[in-house]
Length: 70
Image (cartoon, rainbow, N blue to C red; front, side, top):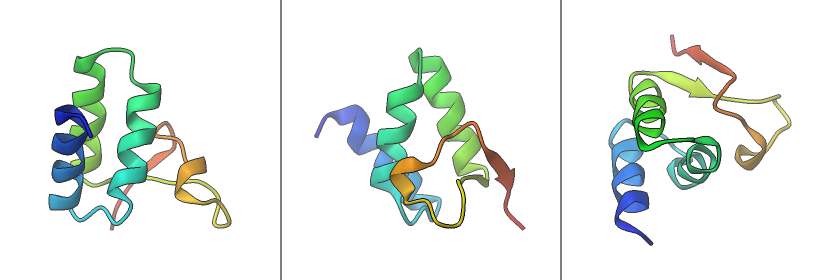
């Protein structure tokens, strides 16, 4: 596991993300720069949910479909 991956997972876990490893992989797969990755992680840590349809597994979710937690 790279330092970047470990750091992102730690940040996501600290924010209460249940699927931190899957979300980390998803965010890494769509980011185009480290600044964009940090912005997406900051959004996620700030309470925005990465979600898909109710029947999707976490690996099929996209960070583009977010909504605030209530």
